[in-house]
Image (cartoon, rainbow, N blue to C red; front, side, top):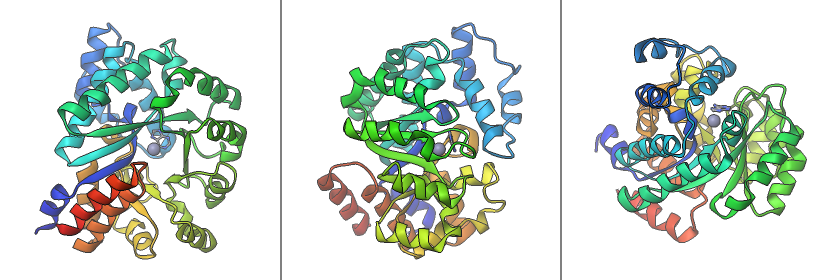
Length: 332
Ligand code: ADE
Ligand code: ZN
């Protein structure tokens, strides 16, 4: 099988995608118009021309501005539904989606409005698209510990529908230690734990995510490679890293895809997975990410299958479901 055909045929899970980062310019303009919100761009083309990032913050500024047009439950439904259709096209059979409630509640949109729109789309996708989804509530790390505690409180009525809590937004200057108490409380309440660490931040932030937040997965983690003892720890604990190749390229975490470390980390036996992060902004969904690294790093059939297997092993699906999908991958 050609690599491109294999990528399309492999069942996959996505473990690192921000729903606000799947907001395609065309849908953004349509929702802005129906909500009578003015975007600071005259056209879809002008907006796309602004997608010229040099680091994480330059992206986040546009990402939060784009999210401003989301006001009603139907807006969150339409956003999520459009992403879940992309999953079906890419044979992503299961996805674990981040949502950032504070991006919306800070603008006066109710938590329930955000949550119900996203959740209803996920329920419909299970039935109509054959794609399953779990939801991960992420705290914005540039905001305070107190604000994160308030968000955890607001999530209480929806607790059984949220699998995990996460940590995202501006990394440098906002270490995991800032949220140690919030994550301890979330764990006590039964949430699984993930955190962005080692994207732009140093390996020390990955150590903190492991030792202070007690994460089940590290989001990104690519800078872990700078610290051999950390690589050894990640290996021994079979700790998943949700790597996002096109994101790393667009945000200048790497300056050339041929220099990306995902293949080296995979060959060291780390549980790395492929993900799209903010696909509407970074030029591609799941299969685009697979194709980009396959071409730049000359990945083998076995590498591709291992990445797909890792995505199931690192997911929060029940073991029986993981095994059923992994058997299908091995039979390809
Ligand atoms: N929010 C959306 N995308 C993000 C990323 N790549 N890193 C941190 N926060 C984010
Ligand atoms: Zn991310």
